[in-house]
Length: 245
Ligand code: 6PG
Image: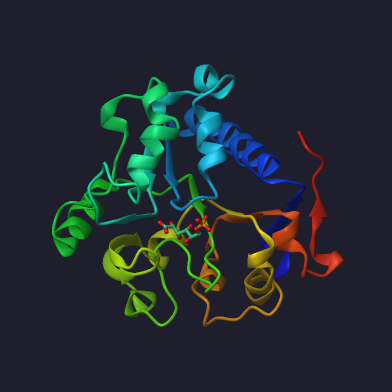
């Protein structure tokens, strides 16, 4: 897998959140200096919520260049924003309502539109390459809403498509490999012993039937931040231990 993949092990979920927030802050600062703005795609699910909550607290709430940051989502469930299953809704609860980011910089996926229409509309809203894409990992090896065996895995052209699946089993919008693998930096946040098997299958066995295995940024970097339990089946030589910040 070569040196393009950086695997960082942290002790606990709190450390995972701290490490992720630190990566975001460093990268956002550099992107704004270098390119005048920072384009970030957030992931859904439960794992990133502690990190998102940190964004809504100091130092991140007051020190991040929020007016230069553009927030997108890697995937969304086609449910109302008020639904507990809405990734955007979760982010509002976790930090968006507490940070001074211009409304025009928050690009929620249009989960309430007919899925195909929502997918093509969102594609048009993505203007440029991502500086950072956060991803999670399901126990079945899915990431974003790219599920094993789904036709969306074969997509070569479109950057956002509509799919159906996952928990909850609903229509979803998801970024595709052509878009994700163009990002300057991709960061997986993964926690929980229940994911140790799939982490091993992706990172050591390189099982390409698992969608997460096919996340390999062509010109960018790939970092896996793993809580110790999720990394418990990885051989020692593959990992770098990170002391808590
Ligand atoms: C989604 C996510 C999905 C998530 C994994 C892991 O919207 O469902 O983007 O890809 O990252 O399912 O979910 P947990 O973090 O809750 O384990």
